[in-house]
Image 1 (cartoon, rainbow, N blue to C red):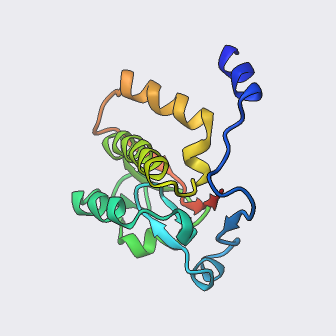
Image 2 (cartoon, rainbow, N blue to C red):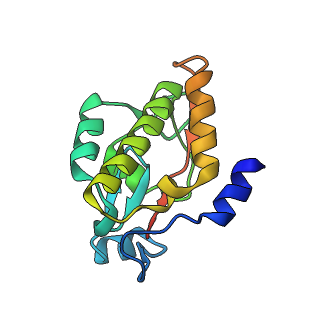
Image 3 (cartoon, rainbow, N blue to C red):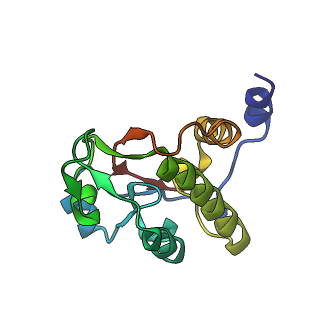
Length: 153
């Protein structure tokens, strides 16, 4: 509650206030707008907010994604990108790394004076990730994810 009051008094502002970029509502629109699918955020991200270096680093780890909870139908990264608003499955370890990479992305954006994607700026996401880092649970646990479309502020 205390942080919410502070957040209302000191709203987060973007270094480039003005236009909000988005990737539309379909993968076709996202591609038309030159958005890229950032694997570590599991979302289509406008070019002004994409961090290609971090995404390449995350992809090199080689996390696996599946269409089913039983992990019998493996998805390529391209197939995952096309499953917007559909459940996919991965490990809790991937989830934990996602949190770290989103924080790294935010830090890099601040240092470079770049815009921020909506996930980086969500207080609830930060609280969720910090809780996961404190109590990570079973890293091999299978969890659900849902690819989506990001916005850029």
